Image (cartoon, rainbow, N blue to C red; front, side, top):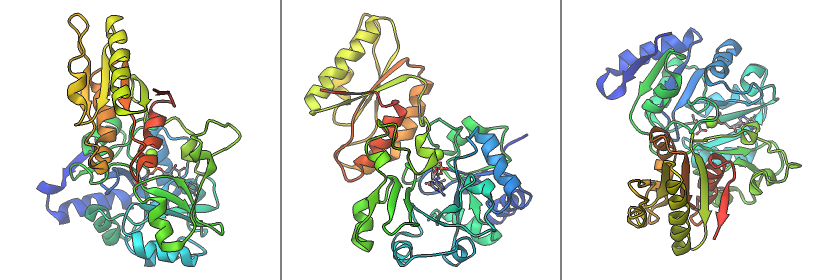
Length: 357
Ligand code: TXA
Ligand code: MG
């Protein structure tokens, strides 16, 4: 299959809308920008179209898809019950990076929900996603547009890298705004429960609806095998770069010292090494040398602004792949209000290899 790429900035809106709308109406797949990450979109109410998403991504069939809407009126058609708390969260955070889970109506096929009786719904704020859904009237099932297990795509180039030849079209609107996926919250119980941490924090939601819980299985980062996460996607290996990633946590000075040591050891043994640093620390690693070899040092952003770290996270992991490093050492980012969301992705990328100093 030939994957057609439209650059939004260089294409008439009527042209890309007609082309992408045509693909979706015919049951095909389109990579689309959203404000969180790029999504791989298909008609959510067409089980055959949804099946193509799983095939293109190599996604396990029990991992349900998020259904994207462009207007609150579309929610009624998909779910049997909208609790008052969900209404309030929607009024406050939609359009935006919040996904809510509801009991599904029969029109939503099990092929979209991974066999579950619930459906995850999100109203993205990205103008391209909204325009496409609004104009076609097609609600879009869209997981992140990466090959299953790889870092989520924050640029159209990432989608192309993973899915060229496997999907019909990509709408390229440059890098996304946020850079990590939406917060997923289950609204089917008496108290909302966060199943995946994201850009909308627990505190932000509690300010609107009172108590919000967090799935115990993700709090302990799955170390206890008796806790199965409620979002099926949270149990899979995810975001992994090709190099062996280890996170180092502790006071800044000790972390820098430890990473310098670890990097030196691997360089001395003849391996290519990557270091994920910050604007504040990158210079401290650039002086590591063993014979003729130095580590590849990348800054993920500045500790003065957590959003920069979120924005660059997946791109840095993918660029490390490009450098063909065998070992990667990274600083940790627990502190900020979105530390849980960041560390959730980084720990998965590291297969939970973490050193405390
Ligand atoms: O920001 C995002 O949410 C992006 C953009 C494209 O919208 N999408 C995204 O989709 O991250 P995906 O498929 O990569 O992640 C969806 C997560 C998975 O962990 C999945 O298991 C969970 O949501 N999920 C979806 N439907 C669910 C349901 N009915 N019950 C429990 N978990 C569900
Ligand atoms: Mg994903």
